[in-house]
Length: 563
Image (cartoon, rainbow, N blue to C red; front, top):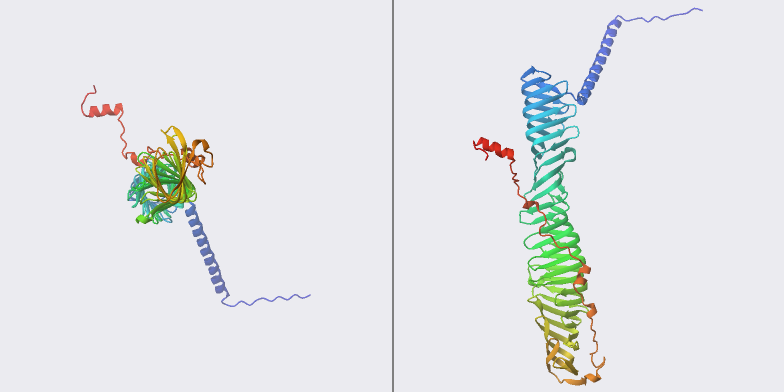
């Protein structure tokens, strides 16, 4: 077999082309190698925790460290470090910084300054002292003692500090600034000053975005208008929306006081909302209302209270109590629109007065109380009832009462007999808390016992007359006037029975009469402690007594001998 080979014929330029190709391959390889090295070096530089010297006017060696003097500039990861001079402990990867210290973060807008600092490149902790200033955009923290952990982005200050942003100024003894969360926790003697109010508390958490704060424990506030806002169990504030939430809180001004276990207040709307043990005091009216939940509109002076509601009308020597399911109070500027409405299961109690009804209206303008749907009123020895009833209190006592439709009055005399009057309309006048005069207009009927020397019952006078007027003393009839064709009958005591001794419709309902125990069972009020602790009562400056040693040293400096 014959093998044949084809030998390529090379052109004269082959050697030149080959050298050019080899050069291009080498150049490309070298470029890729440089790019890889540069990438690797940048990645290493970003991950390295080594402190680097960038600049110094003078470098001197010392025992265990290097002295950097004048315009010192150092680098650590994403931070630039400036100072007047430094002691650089290269082996320990830390530095002591002196004079005009400045640490600037290249990624976050955080700049920290002070007169002295210790910076540890391993732990990434900077300890700054004297005139420290920590700035993050609009928020600035100033103190004399600050530890800043760049790894966690948390700054901790102690021995007093102040934080200022676009709205608030906050000071405290200690604090923690969590930059990533935009959260600052203030501890011990916290004071928040705002254009609208000043707050004092022992523990406060403040979010720089969206400028909200939350307190734990006792919190006291004074607004620029003189309002006081206090909370025993902490609070929450949105300083931009001007919305507040208090826990076991009280809001008070010159004309009102509002309290609740949870109290919400919107300053822009002048609106309050309370839950659990709500109470609203109108200082001008001496009226305080209580309930499980409530709402109050300050400008309208309108309040809604519901859930075991209670009213206390304060007098100089006595208090009128009113229990109901729901209360509505309106105290606007117009006299005709100043009233209190109460609905369902009405119970009234005062030392010399008690009453029940389904609903009630109290007019602030004339101090009249109107009762609706089967109202009954007891006053000392008397009981009166009608479909509707209006009574007035003057000089802390029942003054007069007007009854309409099915009016019925019962008065007990000294022998506990029931003197009775009924009619379409009835008006009663009181003196020193007891009925003095009763006048019936329309369909009048009367039944009263004739007494002998207030010790013996002779019989019963029963008279029908369109209009009747009677004068009483200690429940006994002193004088009677019958205006239109009276029709009367006398029944001696020997012939008295239930039919002859009672008018039709008679009901002695004394078992329904409410008393103080009835009111307390409905809602037992826990009174506000007037000596409750308030941080504004404590002096800002604490005077500490000097020790015996301090006294002697001061005497020696004054060239005085200690006796």
